[in-house]
Amino acid sequence: LLAACQVEGEADAEPTPVPTVDMMAIRDQMQLRHQATIPEEYAGLVNPVSATEEVLADGEDIYATYCTVCHGETGMGEGAAGQTLNPVAAPVAQTSQMLGDDYLFWRVSEGGTMDPFNSAMPTWSNTLSEEERWAVITYIQSLGANGAGHNMSDMQHENGMQGMGQGHGNGNGNGNGMGGPP
Image (cartoon, rainbow, N blue to C red; front, side):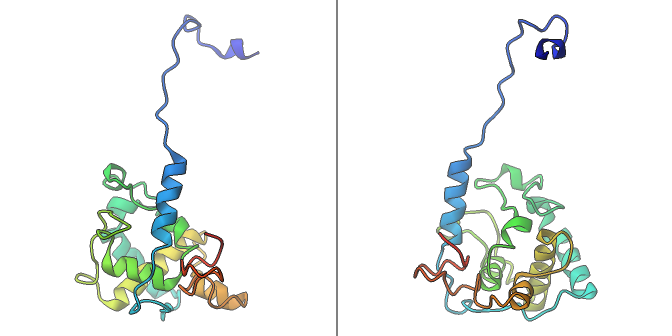
């Protein structure tokens, strides 16, 4: 059956090698970054803004202006500049659902040029106000919630999971802010 799918004259053609991505290395790098200790001034912060239409619109505008070039329109790290970086831009639409507000605010505020991140993400606290940083975080969290506009702290409160993913650790003493196993 599969032979019928071949294009005539290509039966003896060499297959084109497909570039591979070392997914284990990427996972290990992401895990190391996500287990970083959140600085005291950020630890325990909870997003003070609700995912209203106005906040989401503001966050979307900020994201389009400053973030899309690396993180892409969908937030999955597919931005043109983000693909050329090492490490590549994070899929924030996905990771924002697993990380606490404090971690996200820290990363947006301070960027990623320091260990263990060593990324090209700039420091946004010099460019964006605190309110703008929370708005863009709210927008990013809505990307990962299928556009539902839910952020992690709202879902945690709805489900009675306060403290999970808020930089308080996972009960294993590692304080990774992910609220689950390392």
